[in-house]
Image 1 (cartoon, rainbow, N blue to C red):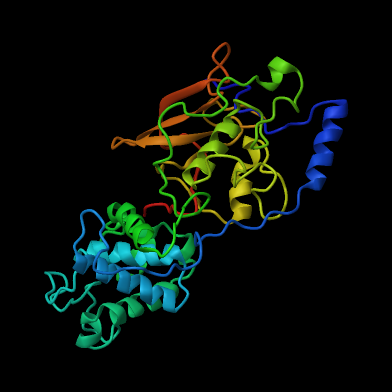
Image 2 (cartoon, helix red, strand yellow):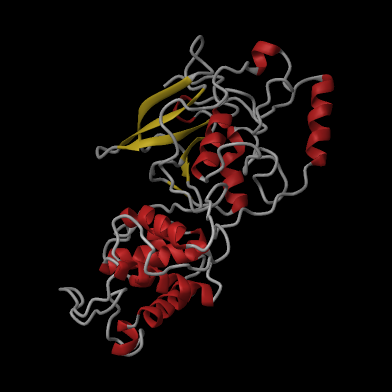
Length: 359
């Protein structure tokens, strides 16, 4: 897979005045604060007999409101409220069930909590507010739960066999919390976006912008993200912003503010180090929406700078479809491409904070 001189750089050094200009710009950038992982403070609930959400009964809405209220009482973040509603959707369909199932015949209530002493009395488990309070207490005891993919966080509390059981309920949980909140709850720029649902095809906003080689002026070729237009790193950082709910200026994640230590995210070469500095997870398993990282020379990547792309689709045969920019040799460089790649070719996959490698 030829990829020489591809995925080049994020404002690499250029001679003379431009280098001085970039250095001065970097000095003006304050060290970035780590991105919030909880996507905002807890929200209060407004619900009455006239409240309607398509697809849900009044009983379900009242139970969702009880869960959100239990979270608000302990200042649980909105992400925590969404996780709690998601788990209840996956366990009981937001209904107070007075029966269990094969694996848990003694399970009861909104969260199908067991009669093992950890979840209070039978009355507690059958009470929406009390059972939600106990679930939330257990969720908050999970180390780093705010950075986990929602279904993984839920699974670490419930300990069910399939850690991805709750994944399909996340969009509905987001919708319910938005609809039942006391104000307009926007997820723009938040960490409650849904990875893997970022865009379709070549929706890169600057697909017609000139490259630094075309204009001969690096400053004129820098995108709003602080990378060169139509480089692999600019497209990948666009996808990261997009998946995290930031789709227009001012963008949340920039070359200059991505790392909490104030260093630039840099060329493809330094992206793995950038993820490590930020404390975001990495692994060897492709996940839709994850950044694909090639170390220098890996898989035909540039021997100096490496390459980054984005996982578009994961197949069952051990391959995945990656999408990106500047992944083909001239004259088709600096354009959008897709290709199917064996999962063992890249050096690593860089996950968003709401993703975790499936074990």
